[in-house]
Image 1: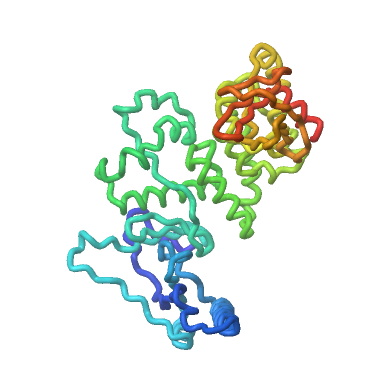
Image 2 (image 1 turned 180 degrees about the vertical axis):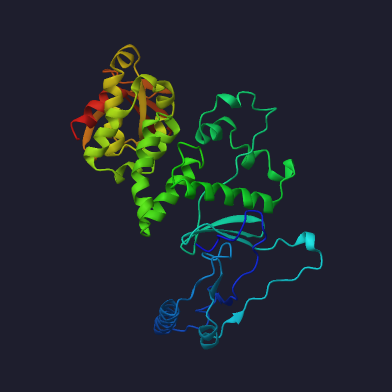
Length: 387
């Protein structure tokens, strides 16, 4: 690791020389007069891109919005290749007013993870490629958050403080510079790496950053990340914190586990401490995949008395009615598309209509468009026959 001699807070602005080429996408076919011209132009460009790729030329990771714009900037650090392909050495603009210039800071945590401060924004790089993921330093306004001592994890803190950093309090409001924020990010990630990528026990990283990082590191062959990935999924899920459980199911992280591992995980959850009201309040955030349905079927079993006493409906989608006089509303099972129910609708729907068997609630939205809710227990019974 190259950062052994670098201390957090030191200015590490010295960079390797970089050679760049700006490529404009918008007018490349402006002189084409036939379909053959289009074919030749695109074949030539494809050949150029293949040649650049073979030589190690990449899209410049330091340029925000380098993909999808009219202009794309490519770069290499190899001077010989730069000369062969007509690339120019990058020259950073020299501002007379130093206060208006935000230098590029760089901190390398290990051979795979590094951070850069570019134009005031902290960017994470994995194996040299920019990693696009939500990231922020959690700031605490003690005057607004009097119950902060009841918070047990960074995940709970994020909810309690309602993303103050991104929506209300800014680092500048608290006198924190972009450079200080950069080093705070670097410190957090370095601590996470030194803790073997584990974040639950020391509340180091928020789940919506920790899991994408672990997934990416696993995909590029980081052996430690592969091992920790499943362990962190299990620990965070078993913690019983509803937002994390829903996140892991919705983003399909649970598919990383075998059927046996997931079944064992469901047995480890302490359902007596699970906040069923919060789960049901956020259930619409779930995609009803096999793993999500397995979890909900287990919830149904563990909270049978609750559901017997409280009829709970879950939204299953919006549907368009037929134009026929006796209109038919067909309900299809989410997981496999099997027909669940057909409801002949002969009367004009009111704002909300309950089916005769009390299984469905149908609410009108606009002409011939309805939203449908289904009784939770009935839905779980249907899903259970499909698993």
